[in-house]
Image 1 (tube, rainbow, N blue to C red):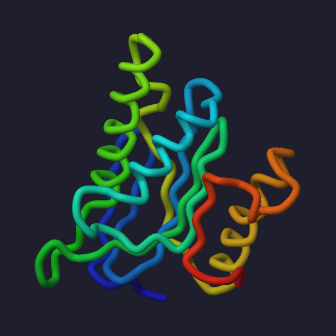
Image 2: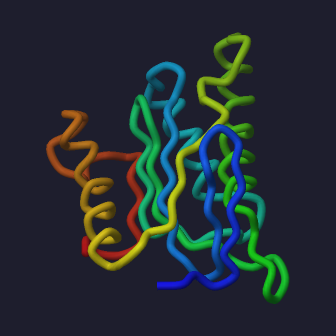
Length: 156
């Protein structure tokens, strides 16, 4: 399946971009986040500056964060760069955490792993894995009990 306006760039990891696609992003934390820190990051990701993305599911765990989403356009035919959205949210939450803890660095690694979701089967698989993550990590007994999990609609 060809992607619309496909482009690729590289930092440490390759990053693929295309218009009108669903993306999966995950990033690790330098250290486990406590519940207040997870909530700061969760809120920063849910509410970036403006309406830059449509989050399908988001889960902030103590040691990593996972998101499925689509990117909106800043002007017709020009989508927002997803790394800008993610990095700005991490920076915003990181500054608040530094202020509260007195740490020297934010608790997030600078690079995120992202990929274009290839098909419905992968979307369903990623969705379910993100939904089940808090239970799998023994943070709660059901996904509904985990405060840093946000789901647009019912599980797929």
